[in-house]
Every structure is written in C-alpha cells, then in structure tokens.
Amino acid sequence: MKLLSALLWSSLLATMAPSAWAQANTIPSQPHLLVKGQGTRTVMPDRFGLQLNIEETDMDADAARRRVQDHVARALALFKQNNAVEGSVRADNLRIGPATRYEQSRQVFIGTRVSRQLRASFASVKAMQDVLGALKANENVQVSSVAPSYSGEVALRRELKGEAAAQTRQSAQGLAKAYGTQLRGLYSISDVAPNFAYGIQAGRWPASDEGDEVDVPEPRANDITVTGSAAPRARESLEAGPITYTENVYAIFLISDGT
Image 1 (cartoon, rainbow, N blue to C red):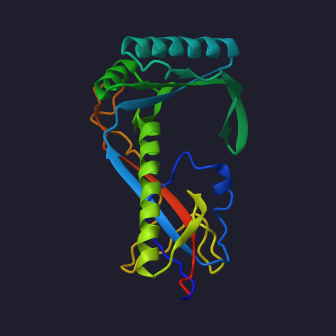
Image 2 (tube, rainbow, N blue to C red):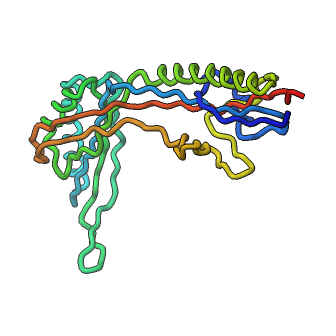
Image 3 (tube, rainbow, N blue to C red):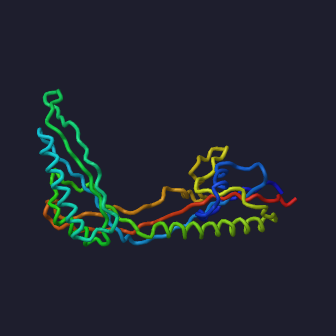
C-alpha cells in the first residue's frame, strides 16, 4: 500500500515531552498519518478587567507629578472600595518626558508630561460599572480598555488539550484500521502545524472540501460593550459576551504501509 497522509481534528496534550514538540515542524520520510485535533469550549466570563491611563502636563514637572499621584490614589481607593480581585491591581511606574505640539509648522514645547497606567479586575460587571460611575473620567483620567476573561482558563485549556490528545490517537487508529495498516508509534505532536514542503505554511491547515478554512485564529473574549451617555458621570451599561477557548494539536504517527 502506498504512503498515507490523513488530515483530521483534535487538541494538544499539555504534558507532552518537549523532545516530541521539537520535531513537530518536520514531516517524516517513512509512511505516516498526520492528524489534527481541536478542542473548543465556550464559557461566560467571570473576571472583568479595567485599564486606566492617567496623564497630566504642566510647565512645573512636580505639579504634574503630584496631580497624577492624586488621580492614582483616588482610582486605587475606588478599586479597593469595589472589591477588585486580589492580586489583580497593577500600577505602572511613572513615565515622565517633554510634551510638545505643532504651531505654524514648528514644534513648541508645552511642558512636562507625566503619565501612569493602572489595571484591575473585578468579579462582576456591576463592580466595574460602579467604578466607572464614580471615576469621573476626563482628558486626564481615561478608560483605555475594558475586557472580560475567565478565571479557570488554565485548567480549561489543560482539559481541552487532554481531550484532544486522546481524540488524535483514536482518529489515527481508526484510519490505520480502515486502510489495513498498523500504528508504529508517535513521531511528533505540537500546537503548530507542520511546514509542508508543498506549500502549507506553519500554523495553517488546508481548507475542507466544502471550502471552509479550518485553522482560523482562535476566537477570544468579546470586548465589553459600553452603552449609554459618554458623559463622565453617566452610569454606563456594560454587556459581556461569552468567551470561546480553542486548543489545536498536530500529531504524526508512523505506520506500516500494509505490504
């Protein structure tokens, strides 16, 4: 029987030895089966991240610094008051530099810009909404992003990888039996597609017969949608959609050719 190469679905085993991963972007010259696995799960977010950009500009650098620190202290108090998730609060170091603007095609110095970023996560949309409602955002205190996440992501990805690894072996065994061959062992396993000599790029997978692209980038958390008045003191209405996690595995099994 001629050499076989098969394309299927499943997902990556987290505990696989690194030595097996190192070979994942090579295709063996021996008879083999190539299978792909994919594990997917959709969950509702239970963490809601918030990032603030705080910035002040003044000819007096120390005055700008003091105002930034006042904004930071107030924001941190709001985080604590609204029960930010323990360990999620981050305050970047101060950034200080010259500020300029263009006037009549020339650059004019307007003072020293002092800035800082703050991050925190909350266990509910309501807690984040309470922070935003009390924040009094303006040109100096800006909400740069709000994003949902899932606290059990690490464990969920591990579970998806385990399910997919088992599925790849089952798929390979089924194909080998259908073609009258036997599996000789695992050659490689990886979460990156092999770089085929005939043109399929690493990290991509060929389209199905129906024309669907099967290795599209993994859907991630939808951004939180903020609706309502843009006024700083308005009570924003926040809505967060589900998050889809996907794990892929590409496994190559050596086979006997059935002859």
